[in-house]
Image (cartoon, rainbow, N blue to C red; front, side):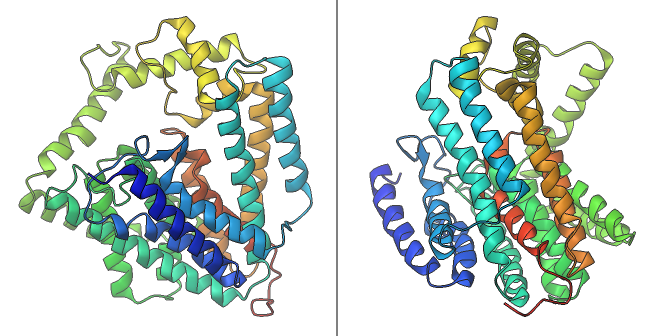
Length: 429
């Protein structure tokens, strides 16, 4: 087992190098996020799952060190400039509300938890706005090149995860050992529409497209993420609805063939089938029939967390519990819970934490992001792509709370920047 102190030193040095690389140019700044992903994959190939809770400096995950370095380079290269306007205004409205809510209205008790989560919101939204500024000032062809490298990076990383699972180095195919497997699944699914765009516009070879799609799917299967697999198929449906090209059956046939091969030749699929299919169907049938779940069932605890969050929302509807997981836990303890955790649902979690007032501000900001994706004028296919990414992300948030995952805000920042490039001005930067 690798020593955490060693990881801190190694990743601090690598992150510092990444900052110096990123501040050289706008292109380098955007590329540094790819290196941030790579640093969470390739140096850790010999190791199994390390865990995001066990690999931290204070409360900051070591896995985030390279991402923070990339963000730092973006701030420096942009000279701390971001696009002003409605986003900038709403950003300050949200942060101001959360501060007033937590300290003057709700009067939270855990200030450390507040600072941790408040900082995440401040940094993630600022990351999106900064990346948007950078993208708006570089050549469109550079963005396309970064897309090609991104989908290939995720394909190679998926292959690494699959191989680590098959040789028994890990219990699943999570290729980022210092991150939760659902976070890895979230990244794969979020990149999938970009892969569909590159394949649809023939910007990558067909065999690269098929190779990548296959690896994405098999990796999600072996990550054993129900959210990931459902969202993977969901993103195909949304993308082809946007494109009005109902050729989904061709890819589905290919995926069915892959499933057939996996079932025939890989014994571990039996456990995966039990977790992803049998357990999920049984849970849905029991809940919809009104029978409910019993404590010996796998999804019992998750279902109880949903019920707890509903009770918290009822008691704290307008202003919520205040920012921070620990401040949410202060309220859930009053219910004598079986587990002190959030319900793995963004909508319930943040309605409870922010209250109806703050959650409404956040939803308006997210709605504005989606509206900008619809206005990408340089390519209707790109507009479809980022709209699909956004809708799929919002779909996945019914099953997790990864709204504070910084790589998602990086992807959204690229789409936001593209939306401000005038049609016909692809190469003037």
